[in-house]
Image (cartoon, rainbow, N blue to C red; front, side):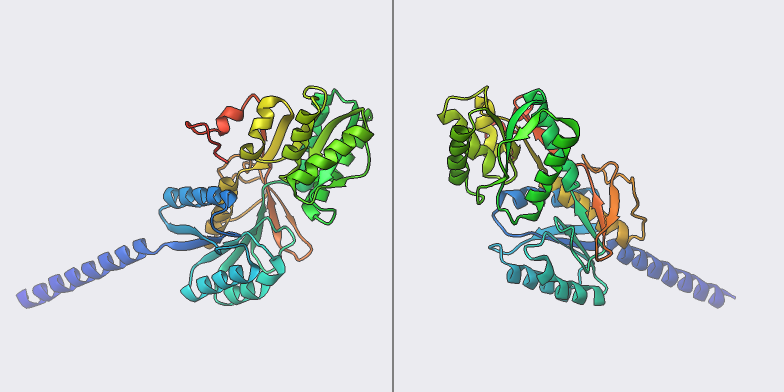
Length: 343
């Protein structure tokens, strides 16, 4: 009997050790989620990395981080995705330079059991989900509302795009024009949308031409990062602060001085860190088998009540309302203690 008891005790101890080891091994297993940016050393993606780092810190079950090519190059981005496939990560997120170039790599990843996701690629295929900071039409309409309030609902304004072929810029302007037609009959465009080639100097020169040709012009609405500073510089040059103002998509670090001078009244953008965090959250949810549904809260500003629509490839696109408005009232919130801008 003593021998049997000893054997049972040994067996129990062995089982206990095995279970403890198994538990520790399971606990150590983490979901590896990697975001591939467009490039290293770019302020926009430096900010996005902080969002991924925050996500990694908040969720113990993940190992999340960001990588990117040394220069924005589609082939280099695809190469990084292939490296991650070879490494056997659990999920790959990409902010595509060339969405179609990534499709073969995404197919390879999916075949290996790796989930794929994108941000800023609403026409993407071969991914589980794409996350967009906002609906482009709604964003354009919102910017128009802000400008219209300053204009008191009447007067001439001029939309700019970086390029006449730029899909998102033109979608924003389409939304602006539709909103003006529906809500502000007193607003009139000076002429057809103007292209500034995403060049601040060109934006300044073309604004000066417009001010000369259309002396009643009251507002410039920009889509590219170049427009607001270029238009604002022209407004300052002509001494028209308070009479004419620049609005549109831009970052505080680019347009902040013009907001302080009054040449620019309001700028709009989305926070890369939040977009990175949100896309990583979608990846984790899918890896854990959780439901991604309309109206859910991703736990970050602007993504508290998302909408979901499928694109033409059947990929679900998750939309937030994550645009940020910056004007004189809140510009200081985007400054560091040393006076430099956070973004």
